[in-house]
Structure formats: C-alpha cells, structure tokens
Length: 378
Image 1 (cartoon, rainbow, N blue to C red):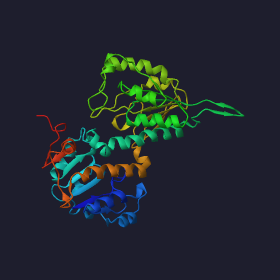
Image 2: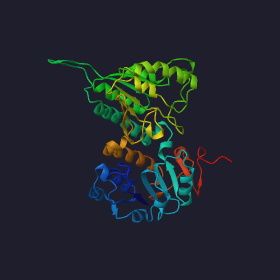
Image 3: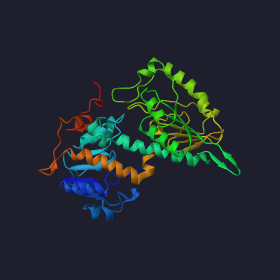
Image 4: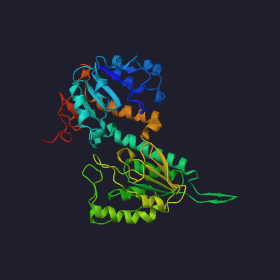
C-alpha cells in the first residue's frame, strides 16, 4: 500500500501529513511518498519526512505513481491524479458544493474521492472532524488578527498616565470558531458579547463569561438541525435580529463573524449601514468570506478600509495562517480516518462501503458521483 502526499496549490500553506503521521502509517505497513517541498510552508523539512521513514519524490508524477491513497488538504485537480492506481482513495477537504464539473473530472480518473468536511458529527468520528480542528484555529486567529489590526490594547489597563478601557468584541455565530474566539478574547481581557440563532449556544456563551444577544422567539427555539448546525432563518427573523444587533455593533471595537450554512452562501449579518455606524479604527473579521462573507462590504483576500475608517479583514484561509499547528491537527484527522480503511493483517487498503463514515464522506466511486447530496438531479 502506497500513500502519496503531494505539494498543495500555491495558496495553501498546510500539508496533509506530518512526520508523526508518516511514522504511524509506516507502522501499519504502508509506504509513504512525499513530494519534495510539500511541508516547507508548514515548517516541515524533507529531511524530517525521510527521518520518519518516508521517501521524497522529486515531482508530482513521481509521487503519484502507483499510489493507493492520496492525502491532500485541498481537492487535487483531476490532472494531478495521473499515475495513481485505479480506485485510489483521495482523502481531502473536497469542497463539493457547486463543483459538479470538478467532481465528474475526478470521477473520470477512476479515483475514489472522500470529502473530510462531510464527516458525521458522532462520537466515533470526533478525532476525524476537520471542520472542528480547523475552525478552532480560525477562531483563535480571528482574535489575534483582529487585535493586530485594531491597533489598541484589548484589556483594561490602569496606569500612572491614565486608564485604558477594555476593548469591546462581538462574536456573531457561536460554533467551534465562535466559541474559541470568545475564549481567546476573554483571555486577552476584552469585554465580549456573542450571538447565534441556536438556543443551545446561549448557555455555552454565558459559561465563558460573555453576554448572549439574540431575538429569543419561537423560531429561535427551533433553529438547530439534528446535526447541530444552524438552520437558515426566515427573512422576518433576520430583520428582527438585524435590528437588535445594529445598535450593538455601533458600540463595538472588533466584530468577528463566523456564520456558515453548509451548501449555502454565507448569510449577510452586517450591512453597509451597520459598518457606517462603527467608530473609526474598528475592525470586522469575516471568517465566512470564502462563501461570500457575512459582511456586505467584505472583499475576499483583502483587508479593506472603509471611508469612515473601519477595517474589514477578509483574508482567506485563517487556519493556514497557523500552518504548523493546523497541519498537525489536520494530519491527525486524516490518519484517524484512513486507519479505519486499512486491513491490519494484509497491510492493504480495504474500504468497507457499509461503514457509516465511508457512506457519509464518499463523493466519487466507480467513475460517478455517488453521494446523494451532490448527484445531478434528473
């Protein structure tokens, strides 16, 4: 069984395997080939992979040749999979929404594509949950970046020269990223408030020492899916919530938005008028910018300064701004999943297509898109 770890696309700083997970795969009987330079942006030298037992491939065709498993962060283009064995398992963040064409191209290669972001949120799969591991880091980084752009101290400081007031930070969306943002902001001494459409989050926010803000009507009480995700709210509820938050946002120094709905554009939470009401020097960190953004004025890949001096932080891939830590966690997520598909006695890939983890994550198999959520409707 041969495992390939290719170099990621230029914009991606993370890597899908670390020396630690390489050693674990080799202990299961696998051969691991890493493309030269794959770990450099995450601070991992080729020599470290060699010391862990991997071989270094000089080029993409060389690393892919004869591979049974391909580990990646972002979905590799179909052209990159040439040379992999028929039925090779490509395990990555597949970004399948609205990508039917790309999925069909991967299908045509004969590979099996697994989307790690589709991992079910069950106890058994917690160690494989890439959304949680990466969102946790994004939440932390949002406060670090927000504080850096804010240009003022976050905690209250009492000095001989006078008192510095604590910064006010508002977190919009209390999933994994939001909770980590709250905890980080609190540790840094800010006054924190947070909002979410899911009623279960109120207790979580308050347990972290922050104040919860939401329109708590009947729709709010039913605004969570069985899987723990936020439901898309009605236009009426969104209007009421916007009215409640508009006056609150005007008083904030940093606002972090994290609201995402799988398969949908990011909901617009902050209007241009709300941005105009904020004080000069205030900062908005939009973690949903890759899906269109929660702020009406966000620009993907940019830090945009409005006419009234508000900074809107729209840089992409915040986990990748902590590449070493993000890679460490992501590689462990992948190992935990791939290990379940390895026959320990035969030391070979043995996918159990009846396994609920496989059924949930398998996007492409036998030349076609097999996941019911992404098949073309007749």
